[in-house]
Image (cartoon, rainbow, N blue to C red; front, side, top):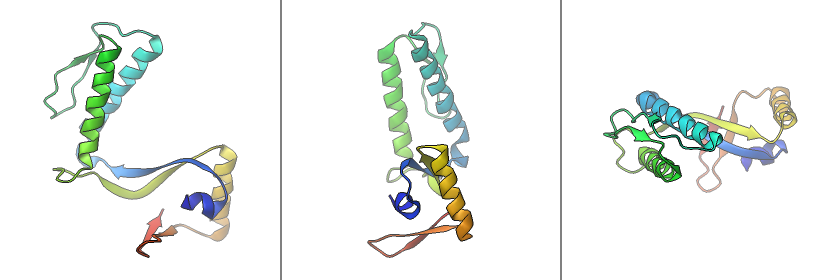
Length: 139
């Protein structure tokens, strides 16, 4: 909402950039796994025998794309695993990099915002939390 109001364009989404350097192998395994899910779904079938590699250190066994139920269960287990990275008591919590990704509705909107930032000579945009007054740089 802040970026939309600041620059007069609608954003489709804003995503926080997380530092996953302590979980590179896990993140890569999840990306590979979900690409395999998407590929199977796009093909319209769930061929038996295509293995899905376990996430390192998870204790998972290899999964098989035997059908849509197996894929759905796999997705739910993966979502649960990732949510735990952000929960209380996470052994290795996922921290923000201090960056956000803005998804614009069009290239024109993105260019409009970049031109405004350049015209203002901004390198960092400061967001002020209305509740606490705390300031956070958006780079």
